[in-house]
Length: 421
Image (tube, rainbow, N blue to C red):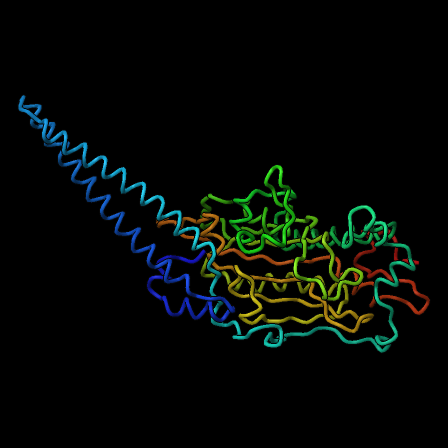
């Protein structure tokens, strides 16, 4: 949620930021109208309350002198009734104002390139090389079915399309990747959480999934819970409505969860194999940081995610996303994409984002500087990493001519085996 003072004092730049994301800034004028009304009501209410206090003191003085205070008492009652009416209207106006503020996206950071979509994203780094046999490699779905380490058909029978079942060494390799990612995060100073897999509407609103992404989430309708689309939601909500001591910043969390996404509107995209599924495993990094340091933290978090891909020997590239490819809540975002040699295409495996104070304002997460007033923290998160496409690239890159798969050395202590097949 944007700061009202920023909207008030920098209206045109806020509108331009919204336009750069491909959104209509018309509701900013509605916010300014409601904000002006709110401030007038607050001023009127405070004036009436001051008058009521004065009249109350006058009534007390008359009674002390045993004089008639009937007229003043009637005046005080009338003022009290008017205050009640004004405060009711103020509460209604504040509720309307918050509802509109929740629909306004975050403003891009000045370093974000202006653009409408993927064509304007900038490749800013690349690591690793093609292998000479890239063009002859099989796609991961052929490998997995041949090796019997995944069962797409039975997953569809159990639940539906997009819910694969990992089998035998496939399940153990998946678990190995999860543990490897968590251990590496712990080594880099992140505190591990194991959060709930369902959240309430307040939590989904706090991180910006509501009202922006309702169609992407699975809903437990009877209890009004949402299955987590990412661990970002429960983990960032962990300190909702709390004040952190400045000396305790940055706060760094990591968490593994299954993630559930309906992927509404994704039909027609490449959905073969593990490219696009409805349930997948992911390790998430979350930071709550001092505003002065948040963009340094963003670069450091990006390094945390990149180190995993280098350790696994996977070729990857880093994209700085343009304004039109930023999400509703993001001020700046990097995407990490791995090269899928069996498909001859790039696959996204991580997004690393800075939300500045946008989420913190919705979540009311603040920090208290030594001897100063509380301020909003900045929130960041990043996938480190999402597993399906990492698994796809890992299998494709490490396959042998006989159709076996060599497991990368850093995973051996987690898998207990070095080769599949």
